[in-house]
Image (cartoon, rainbow, N blue to C red; front, top):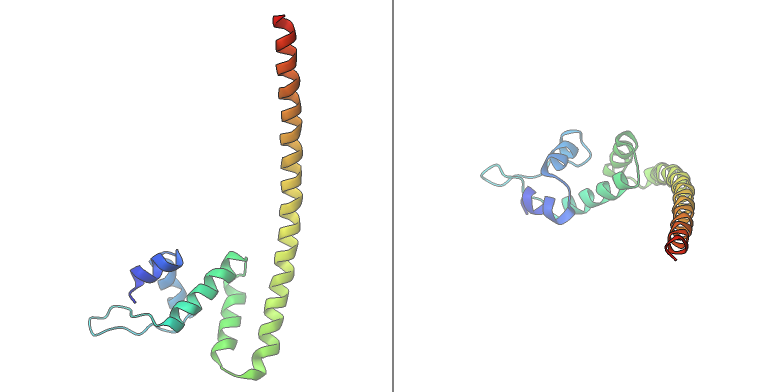
Length: 129
């Protein structure tokens, strides 16, 4: 599969894919005889994982460390990989809690405005009578 199709499938830009390859988050992608990147299912799975982890907020540095450990294909790296993911999950939980607090505050403000609008509408009706 070429970079355009992978980009569309994963909803990430070709530039982002090239960047991930350039910095070593994914191994160099095989190229066909014309020099065009030819992505395998494994390449796509890796990119999808990276996309998910970036969406979750993992830094490039943490992701690079994780992907390096993964690429070693050594079960002895499992505890280190797990630790990275646990630490990132904890950070994500804190961000989610913060976002939930922000959402609750926004809803409170919306409710206040709804109340004020209802009162203003009622006041307008009374003054028209």
